[in-house]
Length: 230
Length: 318
Image 1 (cartoon, rainbow over the protein chains, first blue to last red):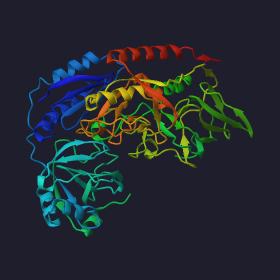
Image 2: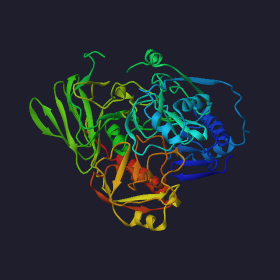
Image 3: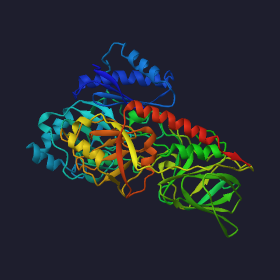
Image 4: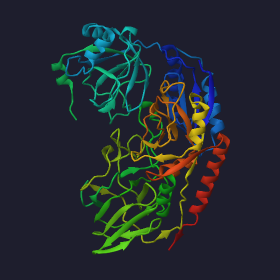
């Protein structure tokens, strides 16, 4: 639950939900940040420039020119009068993934580090129903968890200069998908052919915080037929 | 678009020339960062000189700017900042003066040679450029390839379209943007990750602006600051001005195109009114940080906005 609201700069409030990284805490964050964004989009709160949820924090970026600091703070406090409700959605978004050697750049390495066979790693990954903690760093990139502790690996010592778009990476209990070619230090165990960020859509991200995700294994041939080069 | 529309032909794109306005709002939760002009004051001045609406997109250039040939139409433009540029009319080269307007006829050229003792300058045109609005903004995010000009910087041989034939009056202002080597900050949310002796070092010793500074962040060198508690925090939202300290000890001050969330401890935040001053310091410049309270920072900001608004009243028209 919310621990505190603090103004941390001339244009930000930090809403702090504690230090835990777990789905329970994150569900609170998502419920209230969705509520804030809904109000902002209805134009009830001009003056809020960004509402950025993460594992256990919400950062509110406001316009320092409007003199609405007090009003925004009152609004934020009023949001927390709404009782928390756990989402009842049972929807699971399925994401195709190809684990074949060409796309699973670090599978061998992860196997060595965890003493699990490649097949075991794939099965553990496929059997996980992921929770999307947050979207960020770059457009459309989901941070998802929780991976079975047996499959926990550290960040790569030297990051790759270019991780191909769609690559699926793991570190600790978390899993990400790179929406674009990018440098990155996550251990790549597979790749999805589908796009996570659709530029021309009003709601451009495939995933949103709080979504449930399951991976579905596909062959290299299926990957190639679904992959759209550009 | 057809060539019959008003347009420039880009003979040289420059180092990093992009369309920018005040940036994207309420998209950071999807990973789309704020972007927008680095130097708000120069941006507002560039539009004010031309009587443009306040959020009209401009071309922002870094160091060396573009060389533009007016292919079709006429226009009135202004260049703001500490900028050297030439206007080429019928083969004759005329030195340009920043922070005033000029009229340009078809076939004439503007050669923006570069910024002096600063990094960013602005080129605005009466009536604005003809661009597609994306996610409520005309800004360009080149890292994410989102926004105006297909998310790319201006390149050689492309065309740039604009709306109006310029009207025939001139305006100008005498304005000096002072360079400060003292950048004020407030405490960051993770200052307690650092030992007192490292916090003292952060304020006592000078930092150097690195050559690899860009619109994502001002990278600092020459004063290694190591966190003690941990080099990582659980990732959280960040905004422009946050000073992140990665494991190698060289701090990064986030600028407009920063990633939307960050996992490094933030020792301090540059105060709002000094972010531009820092961003305009050229690479290899030495400077110091100085701490102020949040309350002082708010008052400094209010005063700086007021004095800039008053300064703009000195624009004279002829």
